[in-house]
Length: 268
Image (cartoon, rainbow, N blue to C red; front, side, top):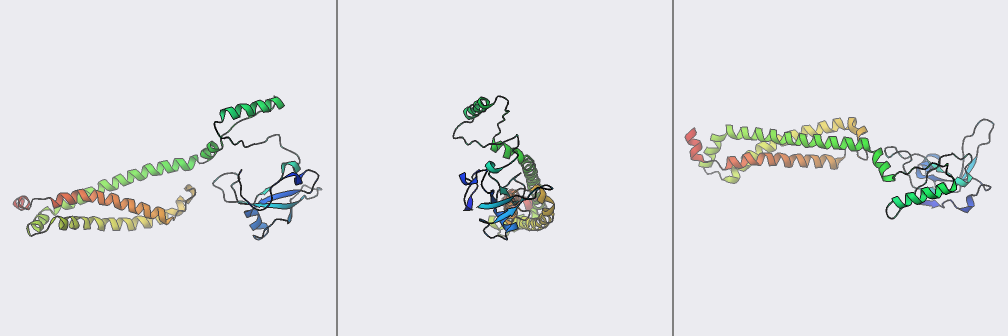
């Protein structure tokens, strides 16, 4: 499976059925039962049934932590045993086939080889990548829904801010006309209007950040591979909302800067 070997060796001919039982353990196993010390060369017992002797295993290798059941789980202590020394083999077995090209030819050849050994053996093929994608179906669905609702929220925020700034400009139309008549240039009017938008933006981002931090704990169970208080994600969201807000405010600000002061004062 490509698991990285940290210390010791992998299974080989020295792990025959008649020889002492061996095992390879992961880092979580070494941390829990050996206080993080290199466990290679040490032994451990495994619980046995009533009246049976507890088997003793000598650790011959240490490997990096891996997920065992699903990607959502934390790293657990795992001991790998050589199949040659395993008693009471299950009738089920799973093999990993690595292919360089298409899988159709490999599947046909593997099925033919198994049927040549025994036609009664049933065989199924599953893509590892497909299994991983299926195990993350819930996370992918939540990510899609969250992205759609986030886009909708951003659109509503942009329309709402545009409406607020446009209404503010309409109410201050006469004031802006007077300022232009008294010598205010294009940049001055843009700063005047955008200052109001930045104030609203600052208040909204502050309130939104506090709410996001409070809701982070509740959303932690819906996240995979992310922390609820990830600073990069919060900063990216704040930057995106700031860009949306400035874009929504620029249009009414530009219109305000292009007002004709004579027409505005005449209306007054």
